[in-house]
Length: 309
Ligand SMILES: O=c1[nH]c(=O)c2[nH]c(=O)[nH]c2[nH]1
Image (cartoon, rainbow, N blue to C red; front, side, top):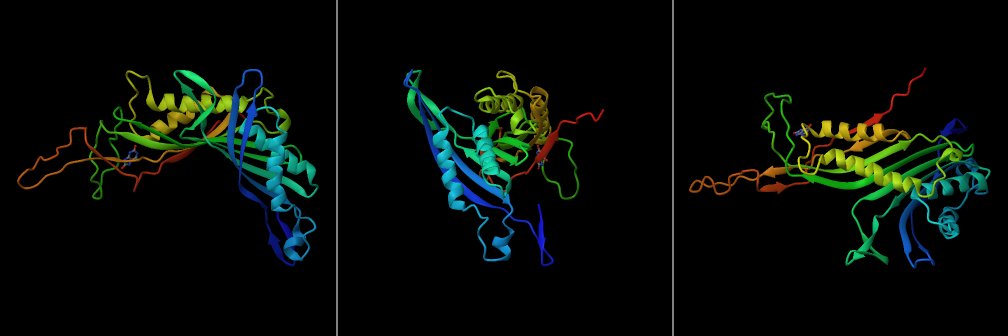
């Protein structure tokens, strides 16, 4: 909400960024521990105009207080909960505890700590760091209105065949040969919006969003790779991205849109030659030069079209 005074329009927010918290839940009945590590960023939209216009801080919730609240609420969560539920809980707190706060935007990155198995047996309290993050953003309004997204960050995927790129625009600047045989590598960043429009309407089933995160990741990966023995042919990153996004929309009724960012990370064919040895290394779909710069940048948002009938 913009606030106006002295002919100046002001839009402002404040909060605390990158509050790091680890939380262990110890289950006495079986000795198992559960662990999460969260990096929490909170932005408050609040009526505190006089702190900008005057030297009057009486409406400011100190960012130090905002930080402390994360630890207090983490402590109070006696039962395991999903990162989404924690984000909503924090957002609700700021909107209801402070009259001047009308919106709270809570972003959390969950690190992928995974339980280890030793000799095939899940360890009760041992974890190792996996590779892709679980992210969420909860935007909570004083009215109880909610905007919730979840995401995956840094899901690196690669397949060594079943990818090609043909029949693209050819002009005087084009040198890329057409191919039906290449590597396909990307680092998927996905975020999807849930259709729940109020904090009261989210599913009450424990760890619902944690499960959903795993399910969405599986659908994205299954679609990227295809069946284990045959794979599935990708005619372009664009086509594969579309199939991945539409599979998620088709499968999950409570996902209303998904944004996918899938850089095309190039593995260049290696050919080395000298005058004396023209085929020192002749590329036969075997030796590649991995590169990260430059990379193709391909991203799209797919949304469910809701009938206005
Ligand atoms: O899948 C691809 N999409 C492109 O848009 C593109 N552009 C390019 O040079 N190679 C590729 N590959």
